[in-house]
Length: 280
Image (cartoon, rainbow, N blue to C red; front, side):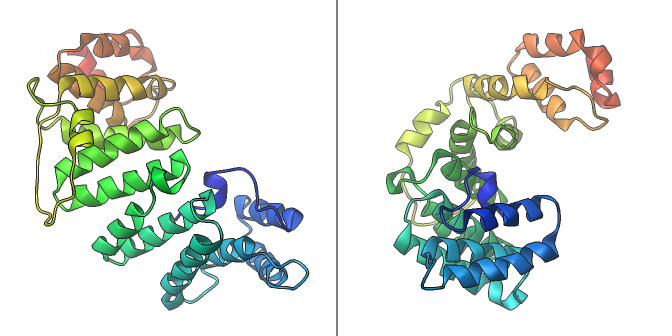
């Protein structure tokens, strides 16, 4: 589930002090105290003196995510929050987060199509922030991958990677690229269209099924070069599947510079599998 602080650093405009304290308690792991404070914030947000629909929806969403309600009430509460924010703050970061959480809840309940519909409501035309859109496309791509619709998965994961790269969510951008490469490296064909072309020409389909497409080596190169500076900041760790994917990509498209760059820093690598490959 996603919370407000993962997208923006500003608390809602009202009840600022208590809102900051609430977020501080959460960040420090003081869940019980945060829930207790949330009750006060919720009551004040409903009062005549400090009435604020956004704060009420925000706190109700947080309480649902924190488990302050019964499990059977979570879906209904997240739906209420999304609908209220759609009325009072459509296209806002908070509204986007409410839809992300509602979509994730549907997905966790096995309601795949409802999750896809909810994530699809987050679009640039509706005014949502770039990072919120990126996160929605990441989740959409994952769902399509689980369904075996790898063509759609690759398109959505690519959009997510591009949306999130260069933002404060660089780690999420890396995840998008790794998941895209995990699919793309199964079939690389220089004659295949670029992914940007496939995205621009994509049309809604009435039925969904298993699909596969070839990836263009230039797209593979672009994806790796977006994430390589992040991956190589620290090469330590006994399990570095991410470096393994980079090596696989380099071998498949014959891009030796990535592998050569890792060989130069071999002493920093701890994963024995990666060391063995680089020394072979």
